Length: 160
Image 1 (tube, rainbow, N blue to C red):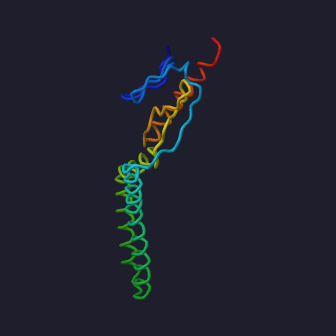
Image 2: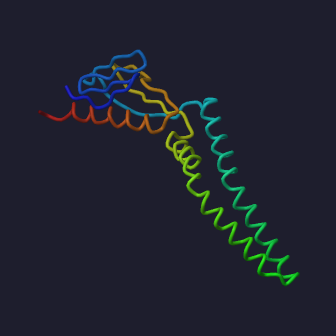
Image 3: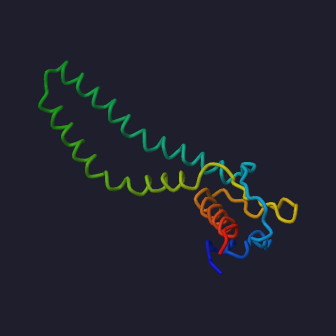
């Protein structure tokens, strides 16, 4: 027996698929497909959170750009470039010092995209009946499970 995938709720082996309270023998599976399920509040919240995070990450550079343009125009009017260059240099150093702190929110954003923005369902045709085995909003996990089921079914069809 070959183990293709296992987590706390799903197990895919060369002999069977156990998920969602169902145990389906690989030999009895005639067709495997996936579908897009109805969007849940968790998925909507993830998309909304992603938008807020992008907005919060985009605002400081935009505000800095407006401040730089304002500083350049005011320095040009007064003819005092020395103070403007000192302020710009201090802001550039401060921005470079803050770059490492972007790791955390950018990591959140990256994981948000990995998890996806829709609900995925894994269906199989088993003894003539269509059975939904997995329904998850986690795109990365769904992809791993779906590929494991595909490999198990493909290996079942090959002569040994």
